Length: 554
Ligand code: GLC
Ligand code: CA
Image 1 (tube, rainbow, N blue to C red):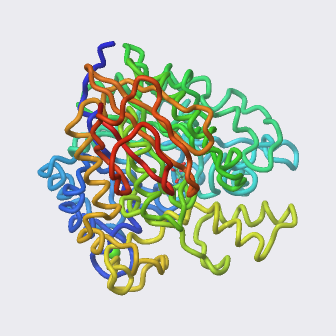
Image 2: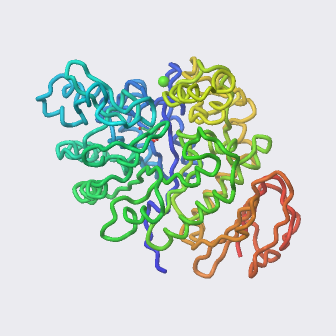
Image 3: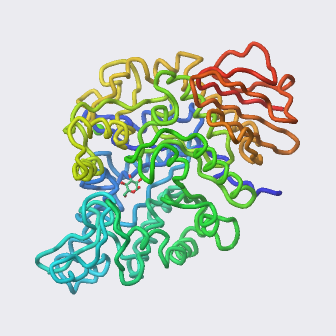
């Protein structure tokens, strides 16, 4: 099968969640000055693109995912001038810039919302979903996925507005052509500035079912079936493609909760109907939980393998995967899928496990040094609307106090939002001031500066891995085959490309497990290209060490 080559398939993306990346002016909040000071570091790591979680003006009800001005940089982070400089300096270093496009909703402090809320006859009123209540009740039974009911009452208008996320995140009415024109203008604005593409936030939610019918009752998110991949989603994405994206050399990845490979193909298969380049699905993220991180279950490696393998198989040839294990919405991968006790080994294993698959890898800030979860000591230390909402939801089921704290420490996405640990000095070198969120106290053991000096560090493993991917097309374009499918502790797969083969062996346990090479793979003559333990001699059968990984070229 002839696979179409493209720059976006060859790149590796680094995600910056700006607030916690690097503070350049000592106010305790990450910013663009900080980013500029780390571009050389990112280039040296070997990434080819940066995706910025929202940098726009925002009252921070959802830390930037509630946007008050789509055309400006939040003063906390810097200025437009500085952003232009970041684009220029990144381009100079061969790195592209990807912006977060958050258009399912705005902030309630966006001028469109303020104008529409002040006057029913304003054209901006129909930019959102304003509806009359049903008697004393809201227009339907939908619940927010973040915060109580999905409708907020406005007394002056005697109408409710819809918010699928937080109260301060009113949903845009994408059925209104004027709203779609606004979105296209925003896209052009950033593309014209030199930006190379977008990560499209919950893009599969932008089309709501006609009439906004009642949903199946759920503890949170009632109504979700009426806006996940809604009736006009494809049509709107197609409009964005033809009117905007086709006119630029750019790239898109859409965030797609509950997406299946089959459905994904209708959006990303490489034919004239394609509307997005990639999609972020969540299936492997559900290997240790039920629907949401907050309903934690023990890790099922089989579930995870099945998710990865199905996507690998279904996309191969004429569609492309987005590969990730971490982002700003989940706790750290070492804690979830690896082992804090074997932090170094498991961080490396997880890295090779997903980056050696077929697709475009995304690395989340701090992941490259194997950052782990911290311990929040009381509920007051949390800062996120989702944590607060879950405190209320769990309380309804009698789970409060210490019991809830324990769950929140395991499940909250804030675990990935502690400041990046740059060195062993006070506040991990993240800021000279007081960090907006406390630094994980393990920064004295886990930090960039130390790992740069240590050839055996997680950071240097990432570098080697990215270099290996860059130099070997098999890692980028090779086909994928899973082996040892029945194992609940080993994940083994091979890749094949132009007569070459490679084999990836990953252990997800600290216990020794007997691995035997699959038929047709002679490892005694193979080259071991990446590993996280010393290997004395290659053989076709061995007992694995805790969280061991080996990558062989044949
Ligand atoms: C996406 C973002 C998440 C945000 C939500 C609402 O899932 O990744 O951080 O809270 O959308 O915008
Ligand atoms: Ca700052």
